[in-house]
Length: 342
View 1: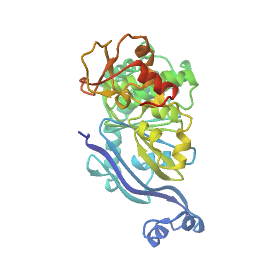
View 2: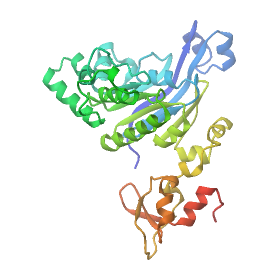
View 3: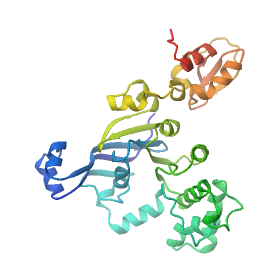
View 4: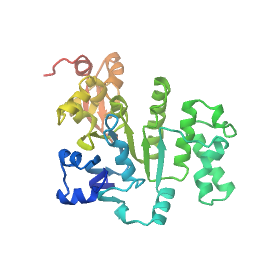
């Protein structure tokens, strides 16, 4: 059963340059690259269609200049789209007044950016509580909520420190705590880990997945790193020159790229990192014996050591925790080394 759509974006354009709306109208709403170039217009986002479902991690990825950050700013209406429609929980986002938008962002949307943007003169606690302070929430209530979020992101005991006393990863945790303090329904993260060194970045990805397992937020996550995308995403939209060229699960992107551009993106990704046990298992169960149960969402790479060390196959569980198939060491190793399977 598909989850309900939280955010629906249809036919969204963001054009920069003179007479952008006029050129768009004169072209029947679908100007080509040549038309835009002759008019001196930059097509930052071109006819984007996105449906983000409740509780999923939806990753938008592409190279620098592909339009991914502009699209996210359109989705949150931090910039005004030139054309198209965007609905949030069934409400027309583009027709909201400034006051309605402010309330929506305060109570429904959380945002984390690459720049941590912490206020240097405020403590960790004060930074985390800042959104509630702006809303006029009393000090006792806002600080209690901020302490909960600080504990959630693993910074308990650092409430009275200032940003300069924290590492980059710790500062980003404060930014995450601040974005969560208002209990948003929709969480935007624009390359939140790209400024961190590789080891800290991996730790923050782990932390992010841990938080999502607890909070079940609807998340729009921007990255240019395909490894990061496949590790985090339920679905991925790949952008190029302002267009969304394919939207699919990580597995489908790797196994069935829609364009040469997507294929090039995925060419060097080890299949074992992407393919999930649910995709490579043998459906159905025999009489056993089995060495145990494995979550079907685990990648082959994550599970192969356990499978290889066990004397018997494992049962593979679906999202409801029910066994739906089995996997043995031969199947896992076939994927790991790229050996064709019967």
